[in-house]
Image 1 (tube, rainbow, N blue to C red):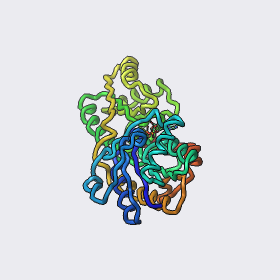
Image 2 (cartoon, protein in one colour):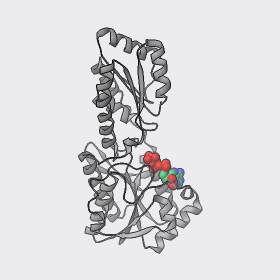
Image 3 (cartoon, helix red, strand yellow):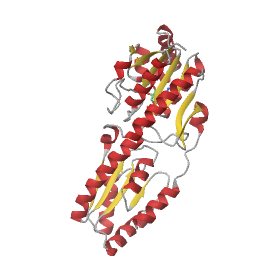
Image 4 (cartoon, rainbow, N blue to C red):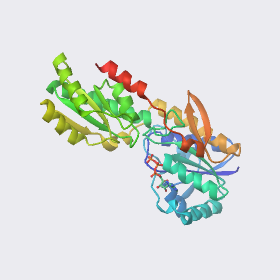
Length: 320
Ligand code: ATP
């Protein structure tokens, strides 16, 4: 394989730049040309492509976001759109494509290589940690630490005012950001889509906590359950304790990646290049039990996420 392309797609995540850097420099070290494709599949269809050099990825390992920009492309969802994308790849001589993104981006890559002779490999870049085949996705650890920092600050003020604080965090249908942040931040309650919760139980925990002398009460709510403002209103009505909701929003997607995310991104980027050099296609790379792995994309997309009730129960026990 002489020429590969790289793009970032879907929602951005801190560490995507470190992954781009790893792909570009590993690719060049292996004697390949690496073409940067801007704005995801949209940019691919439009031919927004340039050759990358070692120096074009200088000074980016510490930056959040993605220097290649990212986008969502409706056109790429259609067979006609993918045909256009294939034609552009052919014109630029690109034989292998590295796609950094989430499950949607992987599905796009899967279809492209099922329909045309383009080899694809996916690198998991999403703060949600919602891909079952890998223990961690790039960006999750940074987002988690951003949430933790916010929780620490909210704790100070909710303690001073003896309030209940609800913090709504991202993750779409996946509760991992809420679960891990709740455990690391010592939250009294964690509400995630994977575990049913009872409003009455929640209020009971708050009231019992107050009676036992707890001076604040922190609830981490996953956006997949949502409704922080409403919940705050109801809790205040039932318990009589002042309750505030904070929706953290997009700050969770930004910021300089943590060491963990940079190292993960570097390892996964290098692995993606290795996979293409071996002539494999329709693969995704990931980390399992601290080993870098590559998995068939169909298998990876079909996998169900393991339940993390042990962490949930631990957080509950420790916050009592
Ligand atoms: P995130 O987890 O951050 O949302 P994602 O990769 O899952 O990232 P999506 O918006 O689902 O984000 O997908 C990104 C792009 O991938 C879409 O805009 C589209 O171009 C392509 N894509 C998604 N699903 C498909 C599909 N079923 N067929 C073809 N292309 C798809």
